[in-house]
Image (cartoon, rainbow, N blue to C red):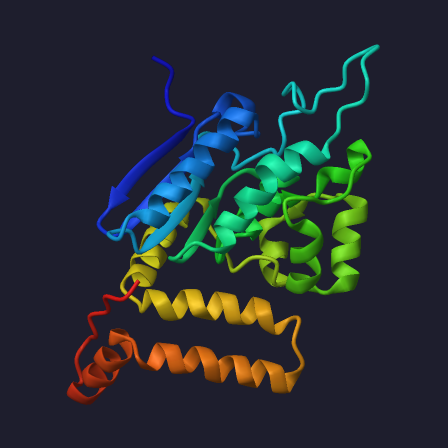
Length: 265
């Protein structure tokens, strides 16, 4: 039996989804797309899951699109492939699934994260990378532009000037530089990567999940709003959170000088 393309492992309330095409540097083909989307949907539907870690097997996180996949590979003498099909059918739903997960998602990056693989990681809430990892917006090297949310993510994360440089030049960006410019959350020594992510995921899983997800959504929405509209959105969401059990628990724990036990999701 072939091994699963996405390996699933639970550690308490933390679920790790590990891309498992190491022989192809975890590059995307249609089968991997379907497996990852299904695994994310299952994690979203499972009330016992309070944090998801997106990881990868082997020496690379994800090398992007597998260019030998029949959906994208040019064929001599045949009409050119319509690349919008794979974006609309697979990449866009995957990005929207990640950005709408009801729990926080942490990307653990080792080795190369290139093209769609880089932007897949950046779609997660927090990205932690080993020092030997690198991020490459490799699209212009094959005559394309950043997809998998890249045109939306990059300027929001690092500003227009750096986004243009990363997207146009396609240079390899070491993880330490990515952290220094604010593209990712943290760069750690390779030997400390797994333990760092384990601790971070456990910390997030113990936090008020509903508030974490609302924070993700409000920050994204605020990029499109003026200040008064953002203030109004904060009031609306704060009202909803104020009626939730986690707010009452947090205040009670603060008053009693004890650790809170959050349960909303």
